[in-house]
Length: 253
Image (cartoon, rainbow, N blue to C red; front, side, top):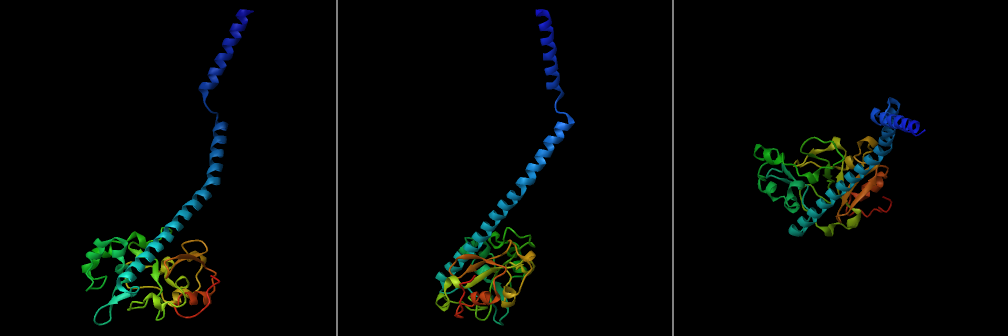
């Protein structure tokens, strides 16, 4: 009896060892792969949403730092910078984005710039290729050395074409006046170029596919705050937000 039990026990052990060695069957392997695929499908949207949330935060911080630099410029010169500088003949030379570079702790780029010559002059070619990362929204796929952060520039805007504007001119309220808009990629410009957003660009309807972030864009206000404004915001409200002394009501945005 003991010999039989011993024999059977040996047989069972051999079978167990056999199953241990044979690994997964094809069916078991397919089941495991299927489970992994389902888990990836469930987790991927969450990963994408987390990444976009991080990019939105990065974009907001870019604009906040730009706003801080604009205010530091104002403290130094008594007004927000002009949209661009001009030569003796009135030809645009350099953008406000270059004028505030020293206040972004990027003095080297500023020091290498020849402000007596246009931004695209051969003398400034090297500097034009030194794009400041703060001028790029991480949600965009954009041409090299281009930016989608454009000042709103009109005869009545917070940033005037060729003149500085002091805070005291902004009678509609600092938190009700847009300075810089995040525009669709198709309107992006070279970061050093004296080109910005006019009233038509800001107010014209845009397809949802044009926006970097779902549902709208970020805007920098004169108080240094950054607001996300829906793509469905009424034109009249936006018009009120780009005029610093128009007296319009802008509570609805």
